[in-house]
Image (cartoon, rainbow, N blue to C red; front, side, top):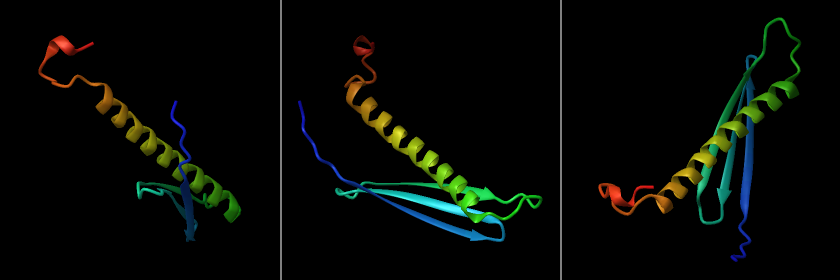
Length: 94
């Protein structure tokens, strides 16, 4: 069994211009592996401008984008560890 104590930092940046909120979430690991996600929210002209709602939506979308990228990176890592050593060697395919 492997014991690890890895640390990841997250940074969230949010900005709003003319009813459009942009968010970026960056996740940084000590070994300098970085992932980021982006999200947007746009105010419907018929709605009241409650900036915290737009921020929450944009951040949630940025986190969703980040989670998809992180999951993709993990899947690529798993694939690289489990695929046959020689792709042309069909005897090793499962």
